[in-house]
Image (cartoon, rainbow, N blue to C red; front, side, top):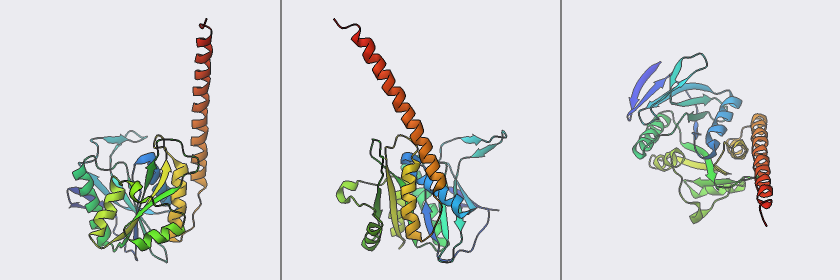
Length: 256
């Protein structure tokens, strides 16, 4: 285990794997937790191995308590999976930076690590909040180069042009700051209400990502999570409808 300081972040290497033509995939907590769900699913399906932890004073000042009563400091983590066509590095974690400076510092630290390992292509994953329920989410995209836009469009990714707005946080910064280093990249955002954890949206993002990376994985566990969330939301709607009808009936008795 090796601990080093990179741009005000403490980076702990559990091991230093030798990787071939790796791409970086980022999926940190955000809107609908879409990116984090997608990244964790990728880690599970590829049986990726953790090799690095990132700690920062810009994360919330807290620790998590484990089931056995021990504690762990909040962090970001990097995993790797080896493939014949090129390896994959996956970044996920507990939180993003809490301040603008922290976001920039952490993004630069991640890019320092990625650059040292030979990364030239970055995929960032997230949610595109619509503020309402989305039954069939589309994948909204943004990219560093026109040719990447054209490739993503062939896979059904939608580009909103001037209507697309901005991309806040790691998903945007890693691409923007990566461009300054000569890296290429794309952001894949699944449409979501933004109010609940959204495995349905994460599933659509994963479908596009795996096509781009030319890998095959099962989506069964995301399907199960999506079904469970739907059952919960349907139950909540049913309760809300019953309460409204009950209140309406009570009001009617006092009319006239």
